[in-house]
Amino acid sequence: MNNINVDLLTQVIGHYPLQGTIKEASPCVNGHINDTYRLSLAPESGPNQELILQRINDHVFAEPEKVMHNIQEIAAHLRQKNSAYDCDIISFMPTKDGRSCAVVNEQYWRLCHYVPNSVTYDFVDDSSLLYSAGYAFGQFQSMLADLPMDRLYETIPDFHHTRKRLDAFFATVDKDPAGRAKEIEEDIAFFAEHRELACQLMDMQEAGILPLRVTHNDTKYNNILMHEETGEPLCVIDLDTVMPGLPAHDFGDAIRFAANTAVEDEPDLSKVGLNMGKYREFTRGFLQACSGFLTEKEIETLALGAITITIELASRFLTDHIEGDKYFKIHRPNHNLERARCQIALAQDMLGRYNEMQEIVMSSAQG
Image (tube, rainbow, N blue to C red; front, side):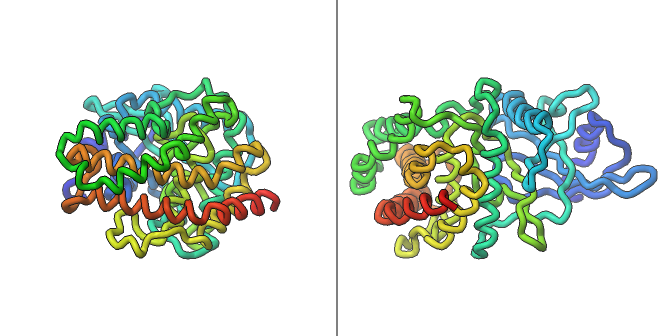
């Protein structure tokens, strides 16, 4: 437990109705936002309790109470329905005084039980795991489809408002604070060419054509706990960005992450493209779990969601590059430019395969 402040963790644990002392504590390093620890708590008698303790990053989430309110709302909704699901969502213990998290030294901490026999994946080639990931996120949509939107906060305003994202991008291009825009005119032209296409989903939502749903907004498959032996999805985790949104955004972000033939910052663009086999398996799983409640228009726009989210993220990377790398951490010169170009290349491949993507969606929706 070197370099871990066990006294602090013990103080946090003291806010919960638990008995025992911390015998082991180790950091979980696969998350990039919050500080997460796996604890083994030894009571006076009986087996140890395996727990996950997490500090909410209040620099990223300025109002942790709203984050926890949303998580509590979806958990309460599912308890009220009293239905059994083969893939659950993570839930957190209440403190001794019934709060959703403990506040220690002006920091927000939450606690949950460790899910046994679980594993997460940062890279997946197994088609059955892609199907499982699609099923998990599809079921997340399905089991929360009847939750009224007015019960949830928008924890990150305009998170996927693509028109506002692109407006901000072009405003940054005009200002060119780091003097970099003139060197990337071809990249900028891509966004000008596809600006209206990328804004269609938000235009449709604002026109009432697409309804708001409960969305996860971080649908990477490493946010699913899977059974280490069977590969079945056990639990959807990392619910900090749960808020009203569009299923096409969740579907699209998952595809952008899961079905790219290269890593997100691959500098060799010849390696970048859409893996149609992975796309097909994720789509099959997603629609197997949630096609029963999605409208025809929502299903028709899923493939567009993949293109939209990829363009949106590319614009965010390129915005940061033009601003001088203020937001995303970089590990080498022009790292954000490489990230942006990788996403542009992926979006271009999706645009060329759009009809095939649509055919897979529609055939999967028909069973």
